[in-house]
Each structure stands twice: as structure tokens, then as C-alpha cells.
Amino acid sequence: MERVRMGGKTQADLDAEAREAKRVRINDEARAYLRDTDWYVIRETETGTPAPRGLSATRQAARDRVEDV
Image 1 (spheres, one colour):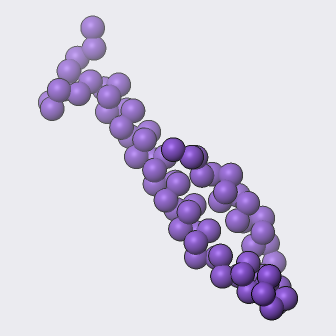
Image 2 (image 1 turned 135 degrees about the vertical axis):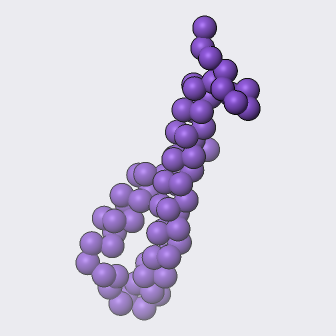
């Protein structure tokens, strides 16, 4: 039988909460990066001024990290 810790939560509960908090943090960071770099993509589309080298790959990596809720 799993021991209940202070606050009525088991270690499994605490571990699940920690995993969820980490997932939320990673999602928030990835979405913030995408939001902060959207203007490069818009500028390239509207004016033809190229986005910085490698931006497309790093934005794709950020999209890959986001887990839909």
C-alpha cells in the first residue's frame, strides 16, 4: 500500500503533478518562442525580407515540443 503524504497525496500523485508541471512549462516556453518569432515569418511573407538563417528549423523544433492539451 502506498503511503499518503501530507496533504493527502501519494508519491504517485506528486510525481504526476511534477510531470504535468514540466509539460506545461515546456509548452509555454515553446509557444512563447513561436509567438516571439512570428513577426519574422510575417515580414518575410509580406515584404520578402528573409527570416534569419535557421529560424524555420528552430520554429519547427518548438512546434514539435508542444503537446496539445
